[in-house]
Length: 446
Ligand code: NDP
Ligand code: 2IT
Image (cartoon, rainbow, N blue to C red; front, side):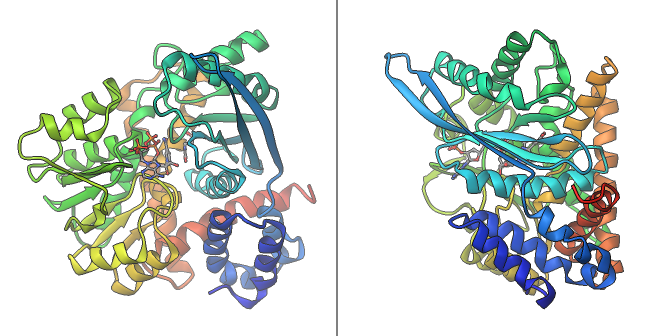
């Protein structure tokens, strides 16, 4: 429920941003947490901080022309939404997926602003991407696309201005082509302008693993704080991309047993526990589909279509995409005995799913807290670039674990302070909002 003091703010968001349901959903979830904060801090209302936080500082939309290997010309649309720079330069990934439109990038940029605040590192919020579909495209095609996108985007970026990274469809390979073009156009080796770089050319160790590892660390903290543990529990992780692979790896290292993962074609069920080496070989090295995993792994089965959330588990970790876990899926998980959910993806659970988990008493870690380890390690990459230094894997992973502990504590304690013990959604939203809002107040009306 949105507090009546904020109803008008939300109505305005709906009116000013028509046709963007994911953005409405992300804003609504945050506003539902903030009633208690505006009651305590009338200065935020007077200065219209919430209205300002819901309005991106800048939105850039541009044409991206490129040529396919067969000579055909293609036109895609590029986006960068520079949402909020109260706490630092705009920071957030680029997504290449055919479903991307302005509403996707705005919901992600809004979420990013709060997530980045939770890390307690100096980064503002932004997001970008394109409706370009990399599936089935050759390396040369993806490279030409990245070069064309950067030929426009570079003028909006800078290590003190806006610092993109990867997201769906964008990994180290694409960051390399984007960085190469940025460097060529600007004639500057400005390492801090992009994160998720290759570790031979300015990338931080652990950045690749960080989102998934961080989600596993957060999950472990949440279970411990609530008197339980991973302890050989059956886990299901959706997706099989960057976040999913490293969530599976760390959950397994911490004692969980991950028995299923997925891609957009179907679900792999592997009762002996996912073989992480094989998964990396199939997805990272060969860039193949999960059917290849099932073929190579005795005892594993592949089911085309269907919902991964029908696989019985005690811990669910959605790591694919927004609204991938519905109310129906949540009811299925609850009836199968699921006790905890940690969002590795951004907004993977629908509002109905969230209500089902809350009323069933399932521990729930929202994405802006649980998946913040990726962007936090991006901030550590920026720190290493700025000091022209290079940290070891162990040192960086220790920093990541500490940051995740800090985020967990902020969510847990803030929920308690506002009378919502155990409600990590409220805790995350309020703690993050307060950090951004206080900086905005300090800067005056800008
Ligand atoms: P990848 O592109 O590496 O992997 C995405 C995975 O999700 C793939 O298995 C893909 O399957 C599946 N997927 C994507 N879109 C859909 C869809 N519409 N329907 C079904 N399956 C889908 O992306 P990441 O792992 O980087 O990102 C996953 C999620 O994590 C996203 O929500 C992203 O915003 C979030 N995130 C990412 C961070 C990062 O550092 N990369 C940081 C924090 C959050 P297929 O290959 O078949 O498309
Ligand atoms: O959603 C996210 O936090 C990311 N895609 C990572 C952003 C980043 O700048 O590392």
